[in-house]
Image 1: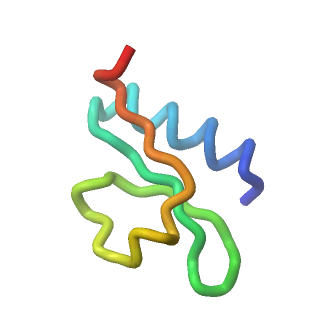
Image 2: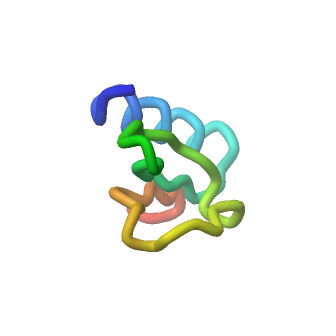
Length: 55
């Protein structure tokens, strides 16, 4: 997934679920998104966090 695709997907999830979403780089170099409260990996892998409650 490209960074643009990951960002669009994360924004869509954040506004739909109304939870903070993180974009992170997995060990194999691919990008993925998931709710921030479920991410328990390395904090340095996080590229971006999208919070629907921040203006």
